[in-house]
Length: 364
Image (cartoon, rainbow, N blue to C red):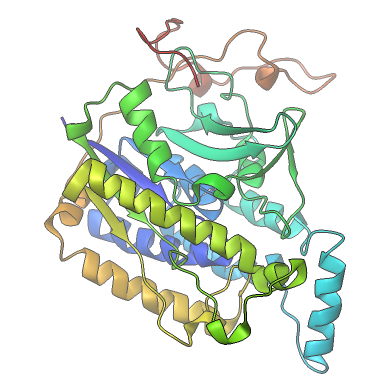
């Protein structure tokens, strides 16, 4: 039986691109798009969308949150003296994050209720993050594995902040006594994360796996030769050049691996930027012109994708309901705040209460 994975790339405000495509896909499917897939993997802005989709929040609402809250999350520098203000803002960003995460949190909370945990999800999730306290990469998951339920009590809003805490742009996020940054550092296209989850943990034969990967126009980034070879810290950091290079290089490697691994069962929907569009397509470019450009490119990419029989078939698919397991007793993720009694929502106790490690497999 085919196991379908939806993989959503990160990209800051460019996450509007994938949100728009999801809106169009959901309209074509005539049902919550998450019901078409067995697993959703998302990085950064894609993780926020993935969390919302797992609750079957309409994709159109995710798109609207990007449009409404983007300018508050990424306030723009206006005239007069714009260049002087930008230089001053850049100098300040050498000592602290470019933006506060207060507006980002407000945007997420407007989409996802504060009381929702990963156990509230209706669909499997695998979300890459980097734990800066332990110095380890991690994948935060819904409790769809009997021996991996320690994330089940994590609040979705907190998980979203951790997954989207892009270095230099936002402060690190705190989750379960650890500090986290954006998983885009190692998996901006979280496609491999999803495939590994399906193949290694869920024991899905590779020939049964299909992936629909949706990008954010960040798949390639280059620098003009005329600017020379001598880039110091300031030049690499200004305009997000270093972060953009890391994101695009990682995505290209992922695409090569999965095209070789899955063949035509790996489908990537993305747009390669034409010259001149770089001014409208930036990580923090929440401007009216940027919004129109992003939506236009997303609509064109969706229309091209729907010409592919496999994409069309995905919108007609119906994934079986996943089994979720209860959180481990005593897990710090499930401890209530001091002074509050422990309560359990029925949704947190779905599935058989058994703890059994997959045969022959050890946790990463």
